[in-house]
Amino acid sequence: MIKAIFFATFDVHEGPKVHYQVPPNSVQPSSTSAAIPLFNFRPLANYIIPALALSNRPLQLLTPTKPHHRILSHPVTIQGEQYARNAFTFNFCLVLEEETGFHSYLPVVSKLANLFRHLEEQGRFLSTELAHLHPNDNNSNNGGGLFSNSKRSSYGLIRAEDPGSATPASDSSSRIHAICEILLEDLNNYSECMIPITSTTTTLNIKLFPIYPPPPPLSPHQVPLLTVSLTDMIDPATWDITLLRILPYINGVNSVKRIALVSDTDLKLVRKAVRELLYYGCASLLDIFSFGAIYAGTPALAQFVAGEDEEARTMREECLRYVAVPVLAGAPATSPISHHHRPFSTTGRPGGGGPSLLSSTLGHTPTTTTSPTAAIPIRPIALKNPIPSPPSTSTSPYPHYTPHPSNSSLPPHPTNPAATLNATNLSTLYLTLTPSLPLRAWLESQSSELINQIDVRRFITFGVIKGLLYRVHRYPFSARAVRRVERAGRGGKRGSVSVSAGGGGGGGGGSIGNGGAGDEEDELAPFLDGTHSFDEICTELMISERELVGRLREGWGGDVVVVNR
Image (cartoon, rainbow, N blue to C red; front, side, top):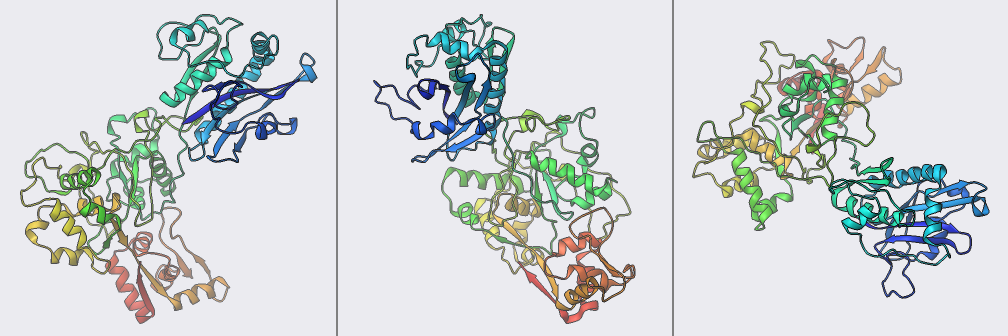
């Protein structure tokens, strides 16, 4: 949120001077005002109106006194004989709180600087305005309170949503001050503004675009899950071809590599498309679901179980609706995902080229995490028109994957769950998941009457997405394999080392030696350094977990240690 906007120039008699400030007295109070400014202007004056070497470029200042504020500016110096001292320097500055995310505001000061530089060079807009406002060099810094709509209209400055048309502005009007006021009000309230500057010929259009963090690294064994229904937004004429091709297979079950295989799409293109979905907050990342996996609770589980606040109660109700097997057939589907809105709504990156994948309704904060204790804020799943299931095939390039229904085939969320299933039961089930107990063994230890009332995959997925559970991965390590890889890397063995773990095309895994296709020990050796999980190895080599365990026992014997973490 913008705390203040001010306009300063270099005065040939007084030096750096604030001519307009909104709110009044927020930067440089008048002599009759008792207001406390946000910061002391004088120590920073030479940086707000800097020397020529620092001019004509964006600058950021952090005020030295507490509470700290961040000043975003773009000082401009125009040289010409028509000006005193042959130069005119001005600066539009935004004042933000130190903790406020400022990256979205950086284009604002640059746009103000460029626009008013052109207006000054073409018609001396700023210098003429100042000359009419201060004909006797009066030290008037403040302009008065916020303008009413009638006053905006008299200055020829109308906000985009205000009715009526703009009237030409008078040269004696405080147009610069009005611009600062409308900027502050509209950007804080609407995150955008449209201000006519010179009647109808020049308009200042500004929109705050959020700067999203880059998505996390995406591995072939990770499973994307859509958190926004994209079916109603599909436009084959403008959407990315790769995204259209893979969208039916993004169901929370298929890994990135399997999506590439079943959609007959290059893995690099699939990863790029999924990263776009992650970037815009339309998808979240999961692990491959299997009943041999191990899950355990995070510290956030305590709040889910014992929390008495509204958020905890709402989450328990969400979980109950999401995981319970429906009693009534054809019940409408609702989502377990709570609404987490971005501070802004946008169709994409500012200045981004090409067609936008998403509409402005998808402006939410994308957050993914690899931390077992961090919850993932995600977007609502509206499955009124669910994504169709991919066609089944008799031959699968992934023998370790068993057929599983897609999101559209999952049982709908019940409107009337079984009476015996309640939030207390779900809390108890979550608490019984321990780091040493595989999911298969956990199911056998639970009451069949209770387990039959829940969708186990939804139960686990809900816990992972909400940060209640984390996956305990298994990492094989063999000192002998590490030494073998090192010898091969030093040229001690014929051939070369080729490892495709975590990357590249849609081909198979790594190998050592002469081709390595039939040498299972050499094929596994690059993955036995303790940094590759079972999921990653199975995905890269396209084998089942049972086959992987068999290879480790037969080829490496007792030399392999499996670490759970």
